[in-house]
Image 1 (cartoon, helix red, strand yellow):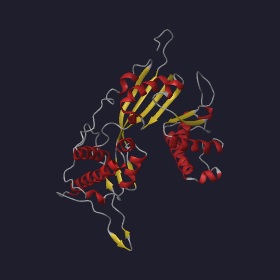
Image 2 (cartoon, one colour; image 1 turned 90 degrees about the vertical axis):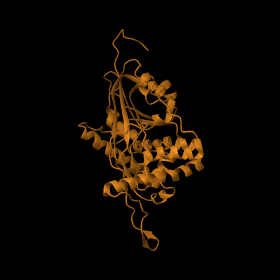
Image 3 (cartoon, helix red, strand yellow; image 1 turned 120 degrees about the vertical axis):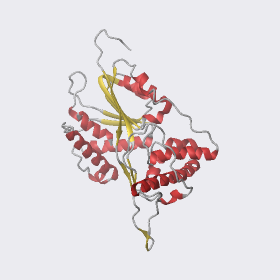
Image 4 (spheres, helix red, strand yellow; image 1 turned 135 degrees about the vertical axis):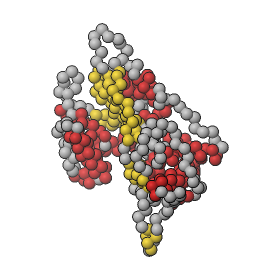
Length: 344
């Protein structure tokens, strides 16, 4: 859904290109996942079928689909954000396409020095040790005057909540299996070193941004993260049996965290998260939400909470959950180099 939103923000069909040009702004999506690209191509086809209008209106049967509804909702949100920033959204979307490609090699080969803007959200951290070289390649894709905006999950995302619980669960599960702890990597600390050595590269911003996230249930969060989110790589590496066992430890840690929050907010020395109460006829009352309030950005990995009880997490899977993770946002601009200046 980012493709039409970006087209809307970048000027769409009426955007200028090059030095004072008036051609359309083309937005291109690249992903290794065929499934993700198939969804993106469906969104592109939907908007092209509706005449590339930025209004987000219906397009017949396609407009009734869940993908169409989500896309139009995202477009409406983008339009509101653009207006809130004091800018005017494009009246019509420009050309868009999406294809399966390798962000490490494919990008620079195709777009070196050609991109007016490059946008990546929550993908770079999945490259691990390859991330610094990939980022430098992305900067080389920028045309003079181009801007790169990157959002990624940092090493420590939150002090308490599901991300912290996952890190703690991995350490506990590996210890129980007699496995050594996961090796640490310095790639995040050196992420910008190579990128900022590219000719004309200038760091505009590197900051942590906190945002609220809500989930219909803890189980829904876990399923999203391990099936299509940032923890899917661990599932591929270790297998479903490992992830099933890790999930049980994760729930135990999360339950201990939630109990600690309950006891601190109520002023008691101990508390417990309980399952929804039965209301008869096989129904249950609504489960109270697990709420992890906003907190300062973590500076180190969180410690395992006190009161951890094996099996206690079974009761929290159906509870709604809200938390406030931190994301790292980096902006790099490629300056125009004067004639006679250094060359790559």
